Length: 117
Image (cartoon, rainbow, N blue to C red; front, side):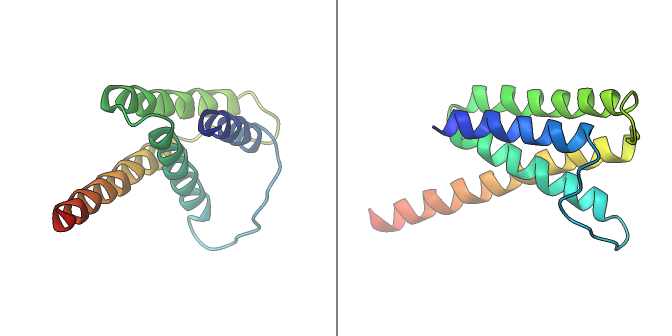
């Protein structure tokens, strides 16, 4: 089930990246970059919960970054969309943010287990 959610989320990111659908009508500065950061942080968290194997998690994170890059390139040929290096950087930072959240989660879980023992 987790893998299905991960895959469906990837499809959702594709749809939102390649069409003119806007779910949020935010107007403050850099809202687009914040949306990219948040979307790719969640994508990374979903990848982590699909596999807790460290090697696979690293592969999935690299894959998510490549996927985001491919979507940015495809946006250049999409009507009404513009490819952006800044968006790609926000995607990469989102993956890094997701990894940071995972590391914090794992560290707190380890400390909690030590306290129980």
